[in-house]
Length: 360
Image (cartoon, rainbow, N blue to C red):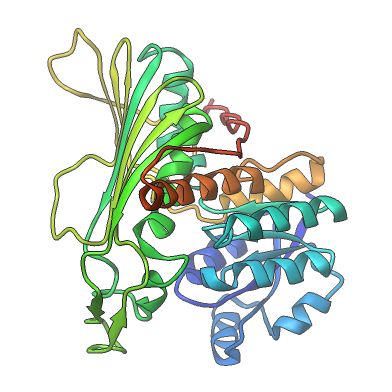
C-alpha cells in the first residue's frame, strides 16, 4: 500500500487519540514525527508513540513529509496551516478551520494556487452512527426532511480540561468549540445552508478553573457562551441549534431529523458510533436501528486517512476545506445575525459530502 507521510504539529490534550490512531489504525498514514513549541511535550509524545520529536521548523523543512496534521489551538490554526502550505505540504486542521472567514478563504486560495489540499476536523460524521443516519435519509425511510434540531449544552470545560482558557477567547465559546461537530453533521445529513439568524449572550463575565494544574485561576470571558440559531437549508428544511457553556443540566436530544414519513434520532456527533433510533407513524415507541457502517469506536484521524487517499486518488477529501469553511461561515453567521439583529444570507456553500458505502 502506498503511504502518505504525516507530520503532527501540536502535542496537547487532543494529540493522544490522533497519535494512537494514526500510528496504529490507519495503514495509509506514515507518521514521521511530532512537533510542538514546547519540546518537552513533543519529546513526551514522541517517546510514547515511537515517533521522532522535532521542532516545528525541522518538520516544515523535511521534504519527505507530505501532509501536516495541525493540532494547535484555534488561534494558531491559520499561522501553522499557512506555513505548511508555503512549505509545499497538504494540511489538515483540527476544528475550527481558522478564526475568521478572511483567513479561511486565504488558506483555501493559497492551497489552490499551490495545487495542495486542505482538510479539517471534525471527521465524526464519517463514523458508523451518522453514516447509518445518512443512509436512512438517502433511502427515503423518513421521507422528505423538513426540519432538524441540535443541542449541545453544558457548563463549560474549566472543571476538567487542564488548560481551558482558550475556550473563552476568540475562536472558542460553545459555537466555535462544539458547533463544528453539530453543524458538520447537519450539513452531511441535510446538505448546505443558505441563511441563518441567531441570538447570543455571555452569562458569566469570569470563570474559575477547578481542574488541575490551574485550580483557582480566573478566566476573563471574551466570547458569547450561549448561542441560539435558526438555519434555512438549501433544500428548504429548517433547523434549530443551541450551543451553551451556561447550562448546569438538561435532558435535550443531541440531534433529531424530522421527515414527512418519520423521525430520526441521531447519536452524539462528538463520537463515531452511538445509538440510532427511528420512529415511524406505525410505531408506538422509538426503535433502535442497527449500525450499517464501520468506525463506531473513537476513530479520530479517519478524515485524515481519507484525505491521504484523496491525495493519492487526486480527488477532494470528504472532510474538505470547503466543507469546513462553510461551517465556519455558518457559525459566524449566528453571531453576526445577533449583533446586527437580522437574517444573514451566506456567501459560501459546499457540496454535501458523499455518503460512505455500508458494510457488506
